[in-house]
Image 1 (tube, helix red, strand yellow):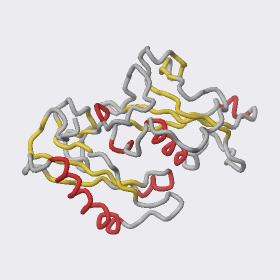
Image 2 (tube, one colour):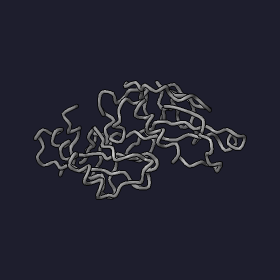
Image 3 (cartoon, helix red, strand yellow):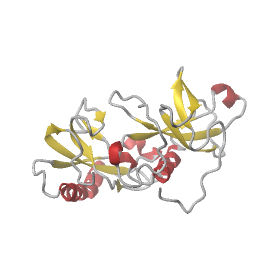
Length: 240
């Protein structure tokens, strides 16, 4: 896994980096990572001073921290091209009322039914050698209504490519759609052509831009994808 020069965040609250959590009776329970689980904790820390006292808190102020830590923990900036997503964990309402002020970041995998997938083993460093089996594929074009995210071993017509494209900082205003497309689309065309190496002339490039409402939460990258006219099974990328 790629190592950061910065020390890892200090631990706080109930969860610790490396904990695996299973959903039991609608609550997270710590379990050995060798057993089936739905989440893996990647960091925990105290909430910053001045954090709003309302419960449940807004995830927006800490989401950029979770996104950055996902990249460090997984060993790649290409997390948006995978089925992995972050989840922010808080104290219970009772703990919050008693003054507990911590948060934890966890990784979860989305299944085709848009639920948390069960998996075994740790995800630490899982993307250091490429997207692998975690690559995000879609049953149809990602922008089409009704498309579903699936594993690339399932029939699909679109798949994400690695090397996502940064569009700016979450602390700045979100760029206009036209500005982002002008910046990203030529790079996606080149990326898709490079990955396919002329082997699929019927495939076309596309780009998924972050939704404006999630920009402040750290969703600030464009993801290139390949789209085919007919469903395929297995990744089209020669890196696999």
